[in-house]
Image (cartoon, rainbow, N blue to C red; front, side, top):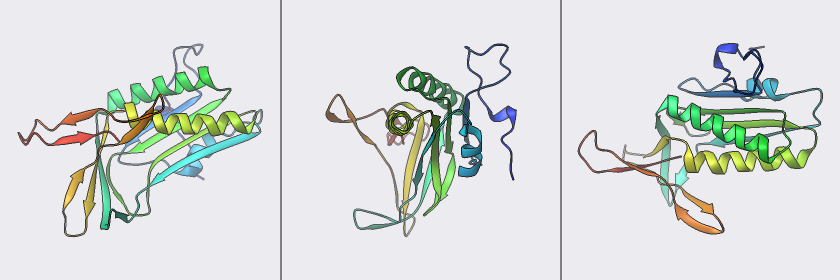
Length: 186
């Protein structure tokens, strides 16, 4: 059984001495497993653990998808995920949260993001997971490129719901290669 190590856990400012954290946050090429996330959030004082797993599907608008490829700014992504966890704890009665996202290639059928949280009762943990994935996609600096059969690809822009309206969110221009191509957050 794999264990979550302390060096992958983000501590919060509200902790005494930073000895224990209620958040497990990771953004890397090595995605922790669902079991590791569950083991972290599982708590004997909680009657509910909810999870969300985002996976790569094999198609989009009639095109065959072979993989998703993610890029991100790790320090800022971890900082923003920590803020989201702080907001979730204020909004919902949850005890522990795991929020992990892969960088690099993610083949069809594989997980790219795992969110898990524990709470005394189911409603808070379910609503917390929904809040986390919606806000992650809208705010965290991770960008997604969808790769199709034949190596054609496109940087994807997410459409999220804000205040009851469908809107485009946080597009980043690819100035590094001078293409003016836009990248969108996951």
